[in-house]
Length: 237
Image (cartoon, rainbow, N blue to C red; front, side, top):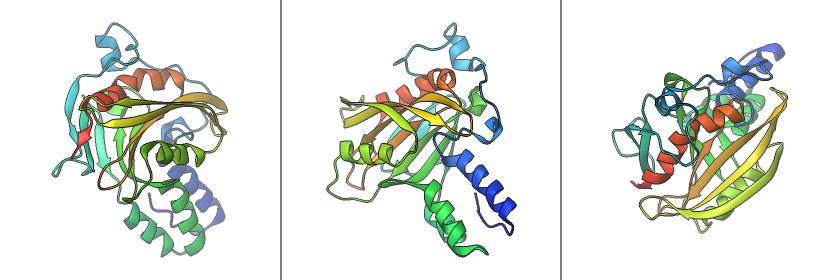
């Protein structure tokens, strides 16, 4: 994730790689140059007899959020089977980039991909071990007066090429108030428009946003059960 490179070409490659890792509309590193790819069924979808229905939670394979888990967060939620969580130390990565050979440029690139509106990348949960291409990402913010809806709108507003956002309120399985958005995002890298989803909650330690992207809309829908599991199980840590 380090952005330190010495040539213009290297900086562009690093920017593309970092975008692929963290930017919602950029896809994953394996997807570069693929305009449209049919999603292979995930283990979860196959077990359910095809693409899992929306709002049907995946089988639980672990927990993310509490002390000692892969990502320590202000919230705790169920991790879908085979999905792999990895903590992101955004402040450390930003510091590395800012002190790199290319200084300001590296810092600006890292800032663009590690922060989105009022929140900062904190955890990345990879779907590839479960048979899909995409991530469920967790973003956290600083404590304050901003409500979950305002934070979520700021998050979406900071993403490029977004259209048709639809917001609604709901409660997680534990009764925690949340706001969700579904929207379309047009990727210049992949030259296609795809569906994305995110929801936000407020906690005493600051707001938390969970975002589900995917290489394309088909992948997004196949990964949706893992996202629904998070919605159903999310509680304060």
